[in-house]
Image (tube, rainbow, N blue to C red; front, side, top):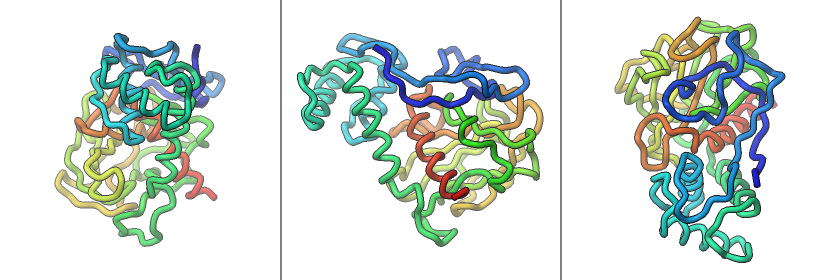
Length: 279
């Protein structure tokens, strides 16, 4: 039984489209955003011991996000089953079978959303250089397409009004940290990766796909809101129009790029920041 997680309009083609996996959101429109298409991020089957696949890895990552730390292997083994049983018991779900059906999946999604709201990332401190501040990654926000047009891939695909790019739309550090890499296969030669240095996501990596050019060198420590790149013009990486694909690493890495299992968490974070910036 499928569980509806989020419905958003489909984006431009993005990096995962030809990376060898089945993307959460497949490429939809060769010229840019296709607002007529509706995309669902979902567990399309009941997950139980012995199953393998990207959806199992998503399950494991979400469990780790909410405090039930298990390896993100993509295999549903004994550790995963036991963690699911604990989660079901904590949530009052009966029977606590260790199998993930629609009710358990719904409860898990709600818990992931709660983590994103309570993380401190949305609506952090007012000071622009505060280590606890998180800000929306694109400025000015007036040149950002409505959240109704965003979609999920390896991160969150966010387009710009009139395909604005370059100096028209600057990408900023969402929080304080260090730029540890520039250039990601499929995302372009200048795509920056930011290592978060404090807060609940300390040590995890935020990556900015399809950026060009980078505005600071590798090794730079940046504050929340500091410009780090521009939205790339034209076809930067595997892309059919200017946009930002912003994502976060799995809880224990590597830097880039998870197969979509962290996309829902990032979507919730970006949506909260966008609403705050446009409120």
